[in-house]
Structures are given as C-alpha cells and as structure tokens.
Length: 138
Image 1 (cartoon, rainbow, N blue to C red):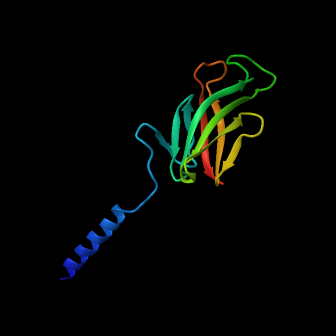
Image 2 (tube, rainbow, N blue to C red):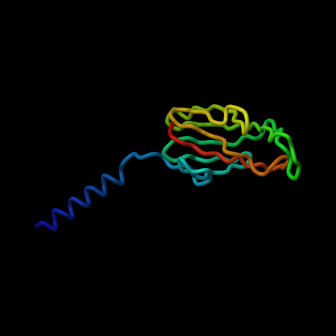
Image 3 (cartoon, rainbow, N blue to C red):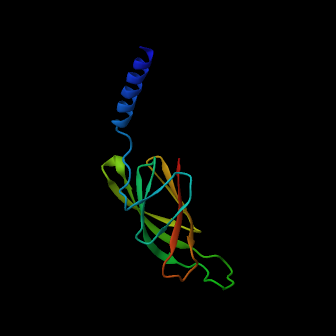
C-alpha cells in the first residue's frame, strides 16, 4: 500500500513539473548565454540570455578610433558598438543601446539587468569584429 502511494505521489509531481509554465527557451537558431558569463557576438548575430529574458543582437561598430594592430599609439582609442535589445517579458519590446570600449557608457541597465561591453576582438581594422559582452543582474 505504501509503495502505491509513493508511486502515485511521484506520478503526480512529475505531471505537475512537466506542465509548468517556465521561461520560454530560445529558438534553436539562436544561441544561449548565461548571466555573469562573457560571450562573443559577430555582427548580425543574436543571443538569448537565459534567466534575463533578453535577446541581444550585435548590430555593428559605428565608430572605431582604436589603435591598429602592430602599431604603438599614445592612447588606446575608443570603439562604439550598437546592440539591439529585446525583452521577452515586456511584449517583445525592443530598443537599441550604444556601448563604448573606452568612454562611458561601457554598460547600460535595462529592466534590472546590466549589459556591459567588455571588449571588441580583433583590433581595428578587421572587417569581422566580435563584441565580447556580459549580462549581470543589477
């Protein structure tokens, strides 16, 4: 009798767990990232930040005055990138943020999450830059 009750209880718990409405997962074509971990995006690439409900797309570098590779410069320079942000829980609202490597802002906070530009690889003037980003709870 006790085994039957345990089996029924486990079956009920499994059914409840499987029908819960947890966070939606990203489509298979979009990569996933975890908060507090750095990730890289190429121009036009998109990532879904788990637990944050954010989709980020690297739209490109709008300005780059960084020192070119293999050159000694007086200062490092600055690069500005555009990142589109879509927040799943706000009815797919979308906006675009501008982040810098040297000047402010390096990071922007949206809906309790801070999106920070860590760096851009490789150095200027590469035609295929990657933005290294991290998303943290604020």
